[in-house]
Amino acid sequence: MTQPETDSTPEPAPSIRPEITAEIQARTGLDEPTLTTLVHSFYDRIQKDPMLGPIFAAKITDWPPHLDRMVAFWSSVALMTGRYHGAPVPKHMHLPVDDSHFDHWLSLFEDTAHRVCTPEGAAHVIERAHRIARSLRIAVRDANQTGVPNLG
Image (cartoon, rainbow, N blue to C red; front, side, top):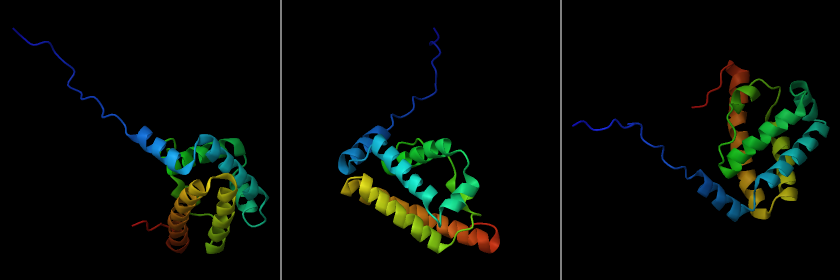
């Protein structure tokens, strides 16, 4: 007698992502509405900023889709939701920016985070913003010197 055929594809392991997200939310007070407010408030300031506004205006003509992408990005970065699927480094590599632009971006972001988030939430997103800025600085600096970023 033969055994009935069974699907040999293993079941995917259950994701622990929702548990991680819930723990971060409980610890920081961050959630999707807060991140949406943070992103929209921050980019409203960016658009009005004399140093950064023109750089963004030259690249972004349709702000709603950009804001949606940035909310998904910060959801992934801050809450580990996995909502963002993109590659930010190539989009930033050839921008006409230097360390002063990154410092100013961080200053505006930090101020906005302190205004919008709980103290724990602000510390959480600010720490991540510094890591992101550090990576982007390296990519931009290397691209401007050699044309190819050295991310290693």
